[in-house]
Image 1 (spheres, one colour):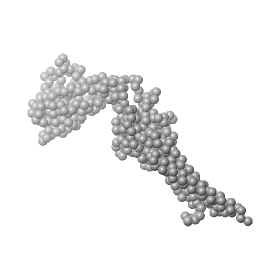
Image 2 (cartoon, helix red, strand yellow):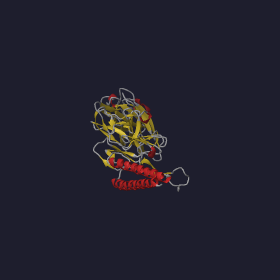
Image 3 (cartoon, helix red, strand yellow):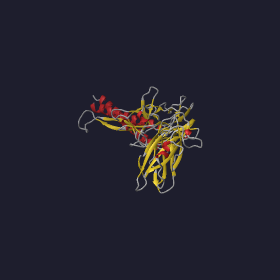
Length: 410
């Protein structure tokens, strides 16, 4: 009698396992067009009837379902710059309406009525505001198109060649003295922006003070005397001594200086491309960040996750840094409705990094990651699972006949 009951149990477990596999196949096929969906697989495990010897009669099978969370899906181009895909490892950090954080690869983000970037499953994209950077707290990425934006200048670069044969200027005639007799071997201007988005023009002067030594002085052009020169109504914004290597004319020190922008912040100006060679004063590089006040005309997302506003004046202004998250064992993440994942003890906790660095993949804008489901293999597996289910049902039928014979014995 125990043999008959063992056959019943084994066949029932077999049908249950195959039914579970069919369920996973059905789920995969249903999500073959779901953005960022990861193929699920079913692993079969032997179940013994309590005996240590695996050859003992009875026993059966059970299943464990796993999602291939780390698998890369194909990337498909779209027409929306807020459609985002990850090329490589990592997940977007998203939150639900209650503020709970999840991981996802589903990057079909669009602004809602409040400007918050939300994907098709209703999860909000998280990022660091550009003003605070990664030292701040994560918040929902929000694009407010109903107001104007500006970005004060915080950094820039100036590179030029200073003529090695220039005459040395006496102290009283140096630009830093701000006298009408000021002499210099080079002058350039660059435009920066204050806290309100107003353009501020800086006048940069270069005068030789000794062999291989120069003075750089910056003034606010608005303070210049009639004709745009000395004396200025206010003193210099900064004065820096530049030292050059006599052997090759490269800048020895300093590599940068700071300039206090009127009504703005402090700009760090890189001078690393300055040289002193046997040629005329020649400007090679002039750059500065920041932007004038303008409305948002669009959004740009870089491969490193930098989300910038494309302003109506043609400039760009960084708004958010979109980070990525990873865990040690993605396969052991817990899945939830909406193709999102949460860490477990088996997966390890989330650690956050910058896209394109530290093993994280890059972010592609105007792109979505396709489902990893291969319909051909799923249909093949479905046929195998169906046949296996039928075979187990035949075992069940045989066990039923055996039990009937045993019950009729007298």
